[in-house]
Length: 382
Ligand code: FAD
Ligand code: UDP
Image (cartoon, rainbow, N blue to C red; front, side):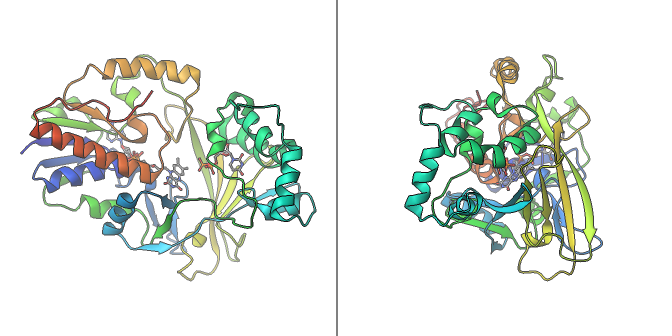
């Protein structure tokens, strides 16, 4: 039996804790926040009873069978398909770009083949290997759609020009030549019936796990600990000695309306002169519930300061150089592993977070059986 300390009670910390606790190890989980579930925390709005996602809307989607089974062990997943709209030039369009978007935008009635030909004509075929976000957009949708839907939104979201960002950010979004407006292409998609917080609480509910909230990690916590899993920011572990890794943070402006505000869960705003990126109405994330009125959040993105919650890792060249310095230090450590979105400084969806946490726990358990050194990282972080 080992004494394990886990810093962070988000999905990463909770899943590792559970896997080790089930094998008989004693696990102490600490988190500086007053709640479990990290950035996936949800709770009911006091005024309306609507379930709200406090750190931004979270939709569960995955192709990973093991992760889907895992999450369903701890909650009842309700059917939910994410359908996103965007307002530009005084009109509402459907996202991700699909046949409806193309026909509406160009005022046409194209068939799938005609739309494919139209977009091919508009796209910049001279770009063979897109490196930047802008090149990826010009290559696959052409200038008009890029400028309407992506350029302004991306400048607001990332605080820099799409010509400075990697193509991988846009590759997350499909372009479809049919009327399928499902934002995601994964096999499984859903929303937890009671929000995300009870899932994490259920995962942590085991006789070998103790949880302490409002507890910031301190050196003394490590006494008598055989292995520490750290899911906080990797630069914070080293007291930011080389400088802070860059993140974007979000400000949420919450408001209530007596009427249904926008008739859908997510409305993006593509134009740069509208200061927010999107408005979300959280009652639409629980379509099986009945609520009168809306509780909405306007979302503003900006550079993260030391007092803010870090959301999106920037991972530009400067940040990667800094990250490498921290990784070089970390790789010399013993009895500690870094995990999760902050510990590895990567944008991770929840399903990837869970898959990586299950894998890390498995590797730790194997290292005990085979008396091998537990690695500091179990994924490629660079
Ligand atoms: P976290 O949830 O950040 O947990 C880390 C915990 O560690 C925190 O609770 C923190 O308080 C604690 N901690 C840190 N340092 C210390 C310390 N020194 N001492 C004590 N405690 C500490 N994923 C999806 O799959 N679908 C979505 O729709 C989706 N939407 C998102 C929307 C936004 C705006 C963002 C930013 C992310 C979204 N995600 C989504 C990703 C999702 O939030 C992450 O996958 C998930 O939160 C990662 O969990 P984690 O445990 O690694 O990190
Ligand atoms: N994006 C955009 N316009 C939109 C939606 C997304 O330009 O209406 C860009 C933006 O740069 C964003 C990226 O596409 O960061 C990926 O979109 P996604 O919806 O996956 O963003 P996230 O879930 O990370 O907020």
